[in-house]
Amino acid sequence: MINVLKSYNELSSTVANIIKRQLKKHPLSKLGLPTGDTPLGMYSKLIKKELDWKHVITFNLDVYLMDVDHPQSYQMYMRGNLFDRTNIYPDHTHFPFRPTSAFEDKITESMGIDLCILGIGSNGHIAFNEPGSSFKSRTRVVTLSEQTIQDNSRFFGSVDDTPKQAITMGLGTIMESKKIILIANGDHKLNILNVAMNGEVTEDVPASILQKHDNVEVYYCD
Ligand code: PGA
Image 1 (cartoon, rainbow, N blue to C red):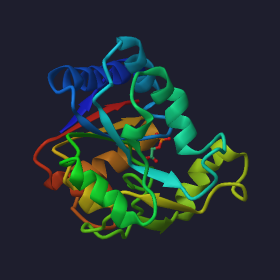
Image 2 (image 1 turned 90 degrees about the vertical axis):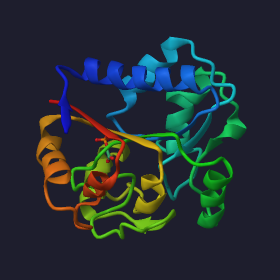
Image 3 (image 1 turned 135 degrees about the vertical axis):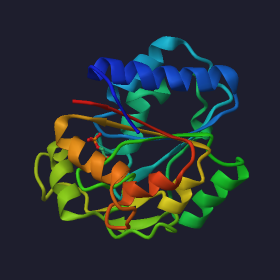
Image 4 (image 1 turned 45 degrees about the horizontal axis):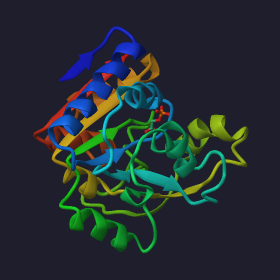
C-alpha cells in the first residue's frame, strides 16, 4: 500500500521519525541509506534530533565509479548531509566497494541491515539496479541506463560529465533487509510507483520485487 502524505515536509518528518524510533529502540542498528534529492529533507530533520549514532553502522546503497572527493560523489553527499553532523564513527559508514564480495561480507558480518531506506528512479530502479537486473543480484559494478544518466545530469551540468558506471547493492542484497521504507516525491514518480507496487512483479520494474518483502512501507507525496 502507498501511504500518501500531504507535503514533502511531512514525508521527510515521517521517515526521520521512523529512523529515530529505530535508533532509540536499537542503538546498535544497521541502516541502509539512500542518496539523491528525495532523502535530503529526511536527513535535514534527522540531524536536528540529537540522536546517538555512536553504535550505528551504515551501508549506502550505491556509489558512482568516480573520484570520492568529487563534490557530487555520494561519499561527499553523505558526509555533508548526515555523517559530519552526527557522532557516527567514520569507520562505521560503508559504501559499496570492490571487490564487491567484500562489501557483501561486511553486511553479513554485521548481521544484516535492520532498516533500509530506498528511493525509486523514474524507470523503477532501486539503488542503481536498472530495469532487467536480476532479482537475485548482489552488489556489483553496473552501467547506468540512458534514463538514469539523463535524470542525474542535473547534478553534473551535462550528460557528458555524468558518471556512466556505479557500484550498487543488488536486489537480492536489499531484499535481505529486515525492514524497508520506500520514499518518492513528486507526481513524476506516481506512475512508476503504482506500477511497481500494484503491477506485475517483473525484473523490468526492479522496485516491483518489494511486493515480495513482508515488511515494506511506502511513502509518497506529490
Ligand atoms: P531522486 O532519486 O531522489 O534524486 O529522485 C531517486 C533514485 O533515483 O533512486
